[in-house]
Image (cartoon, rainbow, N blue to C red; front, top):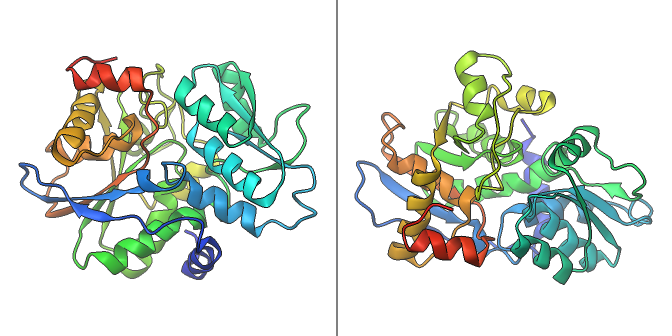
Amino acid sequence: MIPVDEIRRARERLAGVAIRTPLVRFDVESDAEIWLKLELLQPVRSFKLRGAGNAILEASDSELAGGVVTASAGNMAQGVAYMARLRGVPASIVVPDTAPRTKLEAIERYGGRIISVPYDEWWRTMGAGRQEGVDGLFVHPFDDDSVIAGNGTIGLELLEELADFDTVVVPFGGGGLITGIASAVKAERPAVRMIAAEPATGAPAAASLAAGRRTEVAFTPSFVDGAGGHEVFENMWRRTEKLMDGGIALSLDETAAAIRLLAERTRVIAEGAGALPVAAALSGRIDGARKVVCIVSGGNIDPAVLSRILVGERP
């Protein structure tokens, strides 16, 4: 867990950069109350601004002398590029060759330099915390205390906004989001359950929780590009194992249906990873939940993908 005092300091650091996002009731047929934490309303349309912002604002001028580097499928890349521009330093972004065009265009808008590599090389870059031949401060997309503390500011807001929620459902990509939120929430309300939501096309957290040990799974890239994978990194498994109270793997059809329902009922446009918690809350697989908070983590979805989903197709 990250100390709550570190998360509070992160909130002070992020004042004027990350916004306090709305928490709204989702008017939908369900046995439990469902609430939506709309992180897609951040300036870069995802929660990643919090973690990237805290890490880059905390860094000294000397640490940033060579610029910043990250490895990201899109959302962390945008957060890092946005914050690097704010600090006046260059940003180099290592992306997998499966990254959606809409996210790449956003990186370029914020002035980031894109380095596209095969998916396996991109995964190795995250594991190594560096990219051969690229200089700069490496801001890890999830395995970094400063990034996790920034993510944890979401948990502080939840504690202040809703008195009696019993479950928080969080999309799981690398584990930095659920670690940050759980660090804040469980420090004050240890009985609140933290549920990881992943695509069934690659759900290592759910598989590892079921097995009681870190487990590698088959992974197929899909339109849910901000969550899922073939494994939980070893250090992140150590961080998250005791913080997660369950994991749910959602089919692509369930995820697409959640995107449609969010658009129809709330006019909120979520990306695949952002819709996973809603799909999980509506799945009937969270036993005993009365009041569920879904972290709608981002809204950076390719318009062509969105249009297909809205007409009932599954990309």
